[in-house]
Image (tube, rainbow, N blue to C red; front, side, top):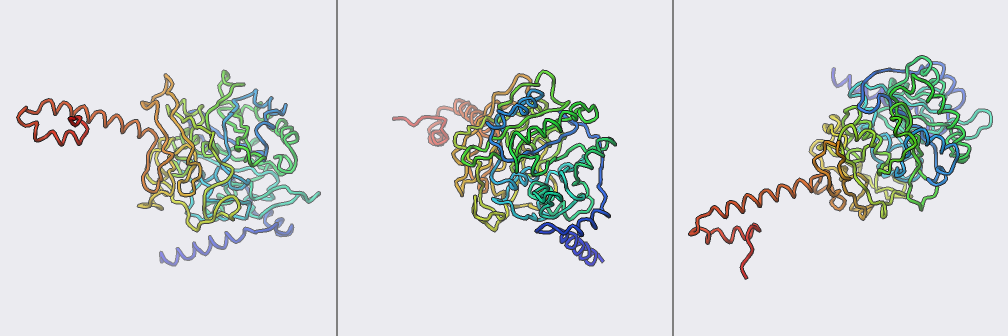
Length: 478
């Protein structure tokens, strides 16, 4: 019976997955599905350390300097905290959306139609561990859970909704679950959820290809954002204990460093921090880590594990972030992986194995299903690093990081440590702070051995002298 049930469930999953289409479905097909599929809007109220609701809005392909110079962006920045050292993780668009959901790019260097295997966990799995409601709002998505490659503007036939800008739909763990799919909705559903006070606690928001600057420019997109965001900031239901991240998927000029202009807004931002700047090094992986730290969630065991946490959250947890020297940082491409087209990375058939043992920057270990799925397997990379690197492909191996000085109100007892940027995680893992801890242990052992040598009776020191010289307690006589 169990075997038969498993077979039926597997067949049902495959059938559901086949709803996905690698091109734009016909309007007839879309209308038929839209008539029967209803959006799902779960709600929850799980208290967090720094915020109780986290939303992010992504625009597209704008260099940091161009965004910073726009008057509407300047106004939005004046209402919150500007993150001056926030980086995308690769090019082009889609792998950045993938990274924001799963903590890894898997070597993706394209905007292809992707269906990532169900054994790859996402931020949705983290949120589900505490029943924290989540959703996506994709502008002009034709119906909840739509899995087509795109949906064109039905008047102009220009680009409108595109799958590559929808992070969670890329993953079979979401796409093969009808309930989860119905949590991926459009802006009409956002308006309904806002009006009915049914907004989730976590959401990813993607404007259409015109409003997000992909097919326009920063002037157009910033005007749209300036018109769309302020009403939310004036809505007490939305604003209450909400942290809103405005950011970009990547920069426009690939040879640049892929630094992207980002702002934190909302009721969770203290008044005294509005109009200020945070120079801490962050990536898209930092967002997952910050969400985990805020709500006491585990890590995916990928690059979210060692990622720096937003200071607004780190100040609550006592975690001490890393200063990353970006001089040699190269996040314009990614490391080898199974989703590569050999464009900006090299193809490898091997799916990277996540970390299964560690506390990670969020401080709550690794997701149970990750530990179970990859038990007794060595992690492919040193996922405890605050930036992605790979020794085999020489990717970011010249980048260094050191722990910031702990603030007076921090609970950290390790104010300074070096990041493990030169070790291959497949051979040895070094958690942040281990270098400092190891040095302290060695010093303690040396002190104990020195005391032991002094306590040895004089007539027995001759026999033990060579041993103590080898241990480094004594100097060898000339």
